[in-house]
Length: 566
Image (cartoon, rainbow, N blue to C red; front, side):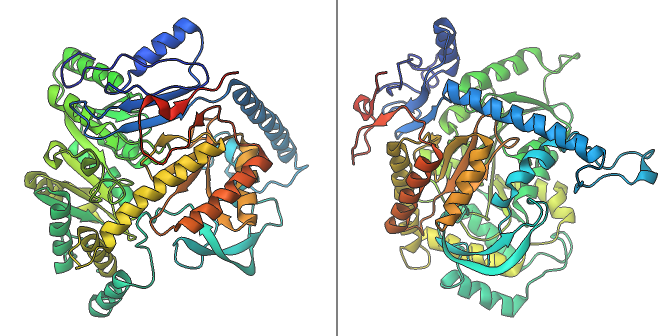
């Protein structure tokens, strides 16, 4: 990266034995320099800790993210596990082909063999031979509010997870560590539920029209004005589905002759939107500002392929909190690069809005930045607000353009009135406009819970990814068999968790993803931590070689970490 007062990197990453000490000074640690040093030492650091100190010109708060590297022996065993599963998968496919084993998968009829195939058997190999074996860990039906605790319907499978049957038994008071109910507003009682019920009696449930026809209610206008005020921008527009907010609006903002620079770990909705736009897409390494700047420089210097004409538009697409890693975008540096190279910035705050910042305004509030520096602010109402849908916010000209060019506005049905009211009530609660401090207290409680839960897991010896202020806490499992073992053992102890594996993550980085909520009390978290530690010992998941010295202060000095000698 060009060394300037705003973006000058620190003195690189230090490679140390069995751990890494965060340095006191510096901006983002240069991953390029890290890799350069690693190649000289013919190895990789045990852990990468990326820090930004108090006194840096771009950061007004401590910023620490850690990604402890997969132990080599564990990586070997994980690859071996997938290799064994693959071999047995091909054996079972052979048996199915000759009708020795019953085939439960969707396949072509014999009389349709010469037609264009509807099912790609090879592409579904992973699903039918690996995923199916552990499918009982996903799609578990709940029968109540997804609060701090929930009720689950028990399922049984007579054919090794190909089909499920409900036993009729309800697992009650299961601790919920999987829902995105960050601020606890997904509830069936209280002011939000009461307001939504009242609006249902007045407006009904459905609108039965698109926004461009007869589907715009006064409540939609009220919501959009409130969102704009909440974010500190000129205007905003709401949509009925969070996924479609990205996938249907990016094509309206970018097209042929434009360049999209996308983080390699962006959500599928962002990836789909970029592909549908017809723009040229280039991917930069996750949260790596050196990689991003290199692509920006090349785009400015070389222009479009073959013709070398300047790009019509360069759009940088990032997330506030990356949902699988628990990491927070380096927004101050992204904005600095965006300004330097005259690019546009699209920020997806699906997981960060309401969950980050002293006022719950998301990653922009978290870093104390000006919302006007973000060209397109996107977020969803499905998580912190306990509702559904999404929004796009920014300058008034941008929103007016999307009202007539967005596929979601033209073709999709309007947001349901009770959902709109749920968002309005919860957002006013966060802003303190309901006359109480409930919203502010929940934002603060979520921040405390996230730090407490993450640090406790690290002290137990688990490998935890991401930023310590993130409510998304990935616990690394690695081996596919341990996804199933961990999820099943946790449920036996009345705790519901979500496992994530390949292809949603790299093949050797399967994990359990905990989502912390302000509704979790310390007693609930301590109970969950106790069970996680017990199951971790049972399944042998405490892989970390890093030791954190016990400290109640949120210090980011050198003495926070202690190296462990072999």
